[in-house]
Image (cartoon, rainbow, N blue to C red):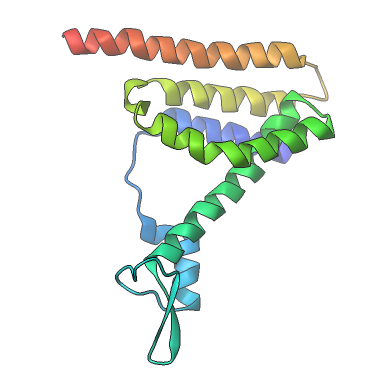
Length: 175
């Protein structure tokens, strides 16, 4: 619990203080691993994941994209375990919340991706939530915060950051 909690606190501070950065797909570990294992074609080959060229099997960029998406799903699922454990220790809750996280995160991401630019302060709220959950996990042997209070704090921080984004976002537009 201490390691997971420390990881969440570190992630929270990183999210809280980090500005937007460009994504470099070629630095992704999954992309580098696939390129080490087998050659990758420069262009898409219709809807094929693999093609044969010169009697060798080549991966296509479509396979690389699929691999990155699936490894991201696994990382999100593993990363959400400590957050769920901070809210509840019930194995059923932990298991089912991870299943629903895997099923819904990608769809939720695409649903929110278009409106994320409206919520300028949301990443501060998410950073604060990660720090709260991490500190709660680290200090769980010394004091207890109930599930209801934890969820209220998390919901309140999210709501505050969204409302602040809306209010200050409108103010910036009028100036």
